[in-house]
Image (cartoon, rainbow, N blue to C red; front, top):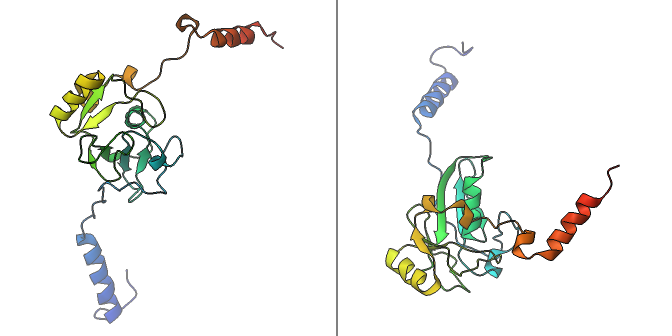
Length: 194
């Protein structure tokens, strides 16, 4: 019970504040894409994204307004989305539109973001992303994606159709001709336990 008598101005103010709070709807978190700046760093690599070629990505997480996770490669973004240990629900995902006016591999654009779930991706092309690994290349327009695939190889597909093998590098093996890897592996297995 409130210790203030009925009709007291403070009691009325308290009741009004509680009623207002009860009626107030939750304000939706702003998930508009943010442009790349000189301070934007990749989630995995912690390197400035403007210094890397190729398309980028950003993920907006619930409870972290104005602080999306940025990725130096779209394939890194896809890997992140598939990790089982997510800390927050994903609210929005954006990727660079490589078919946008003015976008080039060297400068994909700081603000030409598109909804990643609606993009068309070229998978398996000869394109290497910002960190030098094979890249999946996003386009808003399917015709532009198909033209890129005709020139650089690969297939056009949706985000959820991208196979895990297209976004993860295979481990080196002796069968691939990596003699140094085989030599180091043998040296480790030949060490005495102890």
